[in-house]
Amino acid sequence: MPLLPVAQALERVLAAARPGQPVVEVPLIDAMGRVLAKDVMAPVAVPGEDNSAMDGYALRCADAVGPLPVVARIAAGDTAVAALPAGAAVRIFTGATVPRGADAVVMQEDCQEREGVVSVCAPVRRGQNIRPRGQDIALGATVLPRGRVLRPQDMGLLASVGLASVRVYRPLRVAVLSTGDELVEPGSAGLRPGQLYNSNRYTLAGLLQSLGMTVVDGGIVPDDPAATARALADAAAGADCVITSGGVSVGEEDHVKAQVERLGQLDLWKLAIKPGKPLAFGRIGDTPFIGLPGNPTSVFVTFCLVARPFLLKLQGVTEPAAAPLEAAARFSVSRPGDRQDYLRVTLSRGTHGLQAHRFANQSSGVLSSVSYSDALAVIPPGVTIDEGDRVQVLLLDQLA
Ligand code: AMP
Ligand code: MG
Image: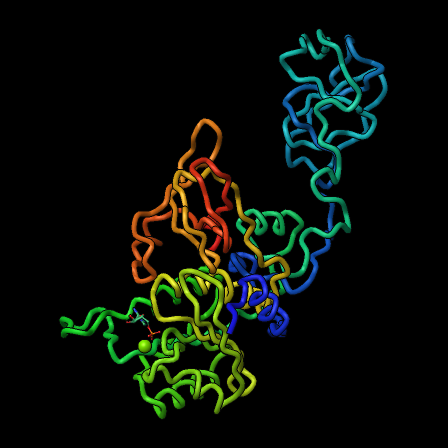
């Protein structure tokens, strides 16, 4: 069977992702990381009226230079602001409403006020130091679109148009099952020969948490057909998606594939991806299923490249792709591979921009290669790299 290119696998999983999470209303203060379920229109303009960007004097350009009588004092928060009569100025402070009739604010450093009369000693331009009504957000404009993952600045923006709550999609509940008789939960006393601590459960929990999703922990599943079937069925009943690690190769101890086929439907692909290769995708009943490889680094990479965009689309996010940056390779790849290689690299800033340094041990079992790196450098199949060549890098901060 030929290896399936990553882009094609992604196309297939995205085509199968049917967003349909229920919509819930949450207080804005709790909206961080949530996905907007409706376009948000501005019920008010921001700012609500022209206001002053400076402490100084508001006047008509035509009256500039002066001297002009100072007929009022307007501070931020004053709500009853009278119009400015011709041939006069008002004392005004930053953030205060500019009175009707005034078309410029002159900063106080450029003015001289004596006995209630102000003179201007600098040129005055129409509109200067006035923040026009709606310059930030126009009344009725789309503030943020449906499908947007809310960031801290978005929360502030929504508050600035007066919203106290937002409609968002309920977070996906994602079940995580760790398959393998060799696995032991960290915290239990000691390992016997042949055992190892279950790290995938924690990597996957962290990845899902960073996407704002709810982890349903399915624990460790023994390498046994009946136990695997039971665990998969239970997980599917209580979650919006099931993710497993391990047990999807073709070994005798790999039971996930056969049991998913019994309970639903399965495509098993050999992806042209390194680290990683076997990846299972399908459903258990109606619940989507993703079977990741077992090796800890493969889990991380295949989750980020394939599972993450699938889950984000299911969650209602409209732009799930992480955009790569370019860096200069501070390494070489002399033998072209037949899989797309995601090298773990650290980044530094050189005189000509970003530089990528290859982490020494790229084995798919070496999880420290991910922990100690900043990015994944994408080396397409059939490609060799010389020192200094441009390579695409995906920042780990953008993936997890
Ligand atoms: P498998 O695909 O089940 O044969 O697993 C491939 C490799 O990944 C084996 O060396 C496993 O011991 C390792 N592995 C599988 N699951 C985990 C896990 N949850 N945590 C750490 N290593 C794992
Ligand atoms: Mg296994």
